[in-house]
Structure formats: structure tokens, C-alpha cells
Image (cartoon, rainbow, N blue to C red; front, side, top):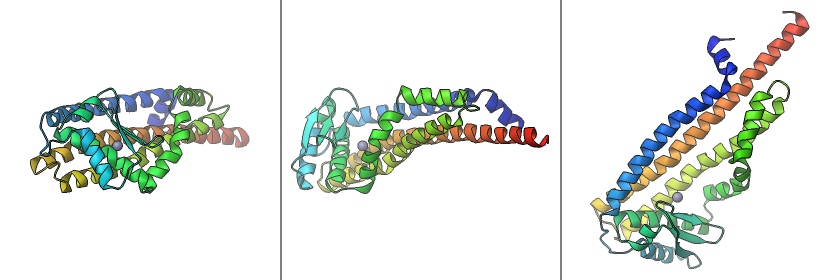
Length: 252
Ligand SMILES: [Zn+2]
């Protein structure tokens, strides 16, 4: 066994902490840039003078969608589309103001509503994974993984089960990427062709949404790195067990 593998096996948590800290820092940097860009674009009025709520309503109507409601929810950057009750939920700022940022965010959320109405495949797949992810994203999974590492010699199935559940959450975060990129593409196309944003404003809207997508990208890569690390622990431990067994059986 190579020395570095021994180090990881001696304390598997070090690697997990390492991955968490690195991605926490990257996440903070990307989140910081996103906030500062969005704050900047929030102070620039869009050419149409339409508020986020009006942008959302018009884009829905232009796409022939009449059964989706536009509502306001608390918070900053809390905007989301809820397919369960067909609502475009906009943060108070986005809902009320006629800025470039508000138009971009509102159009992005309606992009999700359009995906839902047109049966966009990646959104369907993402929705199908929601129940599994609900089990897999909380404390229960963390406990299963910790216990799985501790008991890997006596009960390797536990870590394997934890890895499968975690794998589903990783898959979810990867499928989220095309869903987010596509919603932005639909939103940007609409605000461009409808003249909500023009010239420089459009570039700003595009830039803001690109940074929003970047946060999903970082989360997906973090999830993938963590998953691979758990697989490495499991594979390393299995290899070790096999060689121990061989030594016992053949005295090799
Ligand atoms: Zn989105």
C-alpha cells in the first residue's frame, strides 16, 4: 500500500474536511462576486421600465402560459419557480423594481415555468430525483456515511448504501446544471427580443445570470469530489480487506 493511501485510511475525515474547506472558500468567492454584480445591476434601470413581476407576467403570456401565478417571497436572491403549485416566486426587490437585475432574474424563473409547461426532459429527471434527495441531503445521510466509515470492516454495506444515496444527490446537482443554463437561455432570449433590456443592459443581465449559474457549478463539482472521495475510501478499504484475507488464507 502506498504511504499516502495509508494516511487517508488512518483518518478518512481529513480528506472530507479538506474538500469541504476548499469548496467553502471557492463558494464564498463566487457567492461574493454574484452578490456584488447583482447589487450593481440592481441599481441600473432596464429600458422597458417593467418590474420583475411585470416581466414575469408578460413572458408567461408570450409563451402561452396562463396557469402560473407570480408571487412575492421574502429574502434576497430567494427567487424560484415551484412546479408543485405552479408559482413563480420572486424576492420583494425583484418583484417591485424595474432594474436590469430584476428583469434577468424574473425571466430566468419564468424560463423554469416554460421548461415545466413544455415537458423539458432535464427538469423532469430533476423532479424525479427530489424524493431521494430529500432523504439523502440531511443529517441522516451524514450519520450513515460516518457510521459507514467507522464500520467499514465489519459492515461494508452501510458505507456502500451511504455512497449510493450520496450518489443520487450528486446526480441531482449535476442535472441541475443544464436545467439552470437552459432557464437562463430562455429568459435572456425573451428579454432581448421583447426589448426589456437593450445593448449594455442585455450584457449585464447575461453576466449576472452567468454568475448565478456558477454557484450551481461549484456545488456540483463539490458534490462530485466528495462522492469520489467516499468511493476511494470504500475501494481502498475493500482492497485492504482482500489482501488481509489472502494473507490469512495463504500465509502470503
Ligand atoms: Zn433557476
